[in-house]
Image (tube, rainbow, N blue to C red; front, side, top):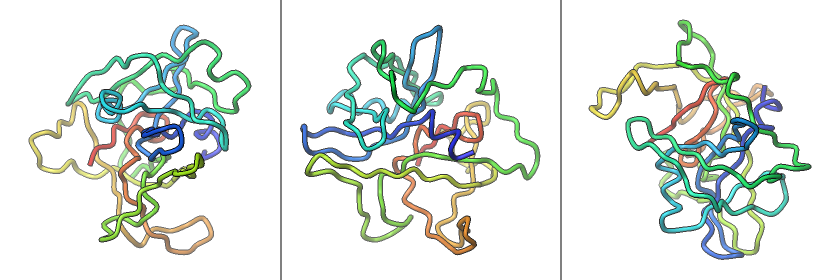
Length: 206
């Protein structure tokens, strides 16, 4: 599942300059009518108002600046997308996902395991007192993806959470299990906004 999802997602970078950048969020490549779009959250895309942002179609390659404007819907939908230039993914291992692969609504069965994959913007654990943001000062920025299994949990009792638009998933800060059987810290969730959940779209928001 991880290998399948990796071909459709990309980290998003906040570009301070040609050589300095920061991990900012996660995005999905989406094919609509033969054109390729970047799909993410509106609260991720709004960074374009003040700072250039870029995506990474080829691992270990040069990040590509997003130049087309974002079409966005604010909260509670919190979605945005931008059309890429023709040929932006030519020769790249990443490919846009087809819309029919996304469910129209989120309706998991009880206790269903949900697969999540995105790009945490921090290498430090969740709730640490010393957060370590992933940063580039010399043109190289390592942003490994973070796949994990989780389950749906009740929405928090907040006025800005609406069941017709939102769902909540368990994201514990410790006691998680790796594929090799050991325990692992859960990374700071900032940067996971825009991640895929199973084959549906997860609008992650702190």
